[in-house]
Image (cartoon, rainbow, N blue to C red; front, side, top):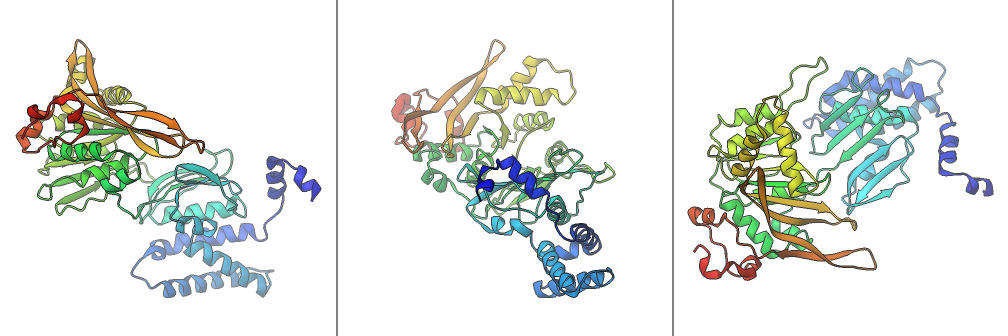
Length: 449
């Protein structure tokens, strides 16, 4: 026991890896063969769970019966273990069922982490070896008709329940199979939920809902896992029910409740490297589908140009997200993505397109205490010389940091009157005088009625 306490974590892991898991190669081979043969039957929701289990157990016993030199007890144990892995997700099953876990990060068979409430936590979950982890990964990607092997060692896909997975195996990974699962949240968070969680205030939430109704073009920026898609979902709920909405996503996550919603999802390349349908292809196609609104889950490439052109050609009220560290960085990233189209466009022309298309930038950050908050609501104004003018309407100010490391602060109004208020008037959307933005000096009498 004293020797065990003196071992470093790395030495402990190396000692664990020296143990040979019985019948590891046999389990790997039979598991992969069964997934290859049964394929989508394993994930057919029309098949009764009990019937599927009986079919898997029968297949396993038939294959194990052909193996020589294995006792009856070992055959039964192997069948039970493989059935659990094939019909479930092995050691990950309880993490996937835990509603408090938002993300699962597997850094090899002996190092599993989760995210809870924005914080990372190490778990005691372990896989038997690299082969065991790889079997679970193969099972997950098979659910969506994909495969992962040495010829295709990286997969980015969406599971049937909406969860997103990214898997990387050797030779790309030098530390064994890697798996990241961003779990799908069954609870559709509305604006009142975000206000209750402290992501923004009642006044700013009310303002943003009215901006969507007034058909302002809004871009949500933030880092990975900051809550951009959640905010996009909440804002999209304010779109009137009588409008035709087209959502375009790389991996479908949006959950719009309106009656007239058309959902498009990009398609990656197949094993032969063909058949890809990009976000840009879908944006172009959506313009021929008579949309009232276009909602793009995330802009990350040349589709930025087509999005800006759509916003500038009558498709007001479009919404999207992108990765950026600040509102100003968001515009710089848009410029870069437009240049990725390959067209030799002058930088000033690109900036004029951006300034004309966008009305509002909403920036979100994941704070050090794990909370996700809106830290800036910024208006995109017009060009001055060769620079796009930005004006913060609200900015987050830290009031204090509690002893528990909890950040206390709120969005404070700048007192600047936004120039987009004429759009509120044209759309018949009122800006109530009780909003903090009006109390900050816009003048109640000057607001549209």
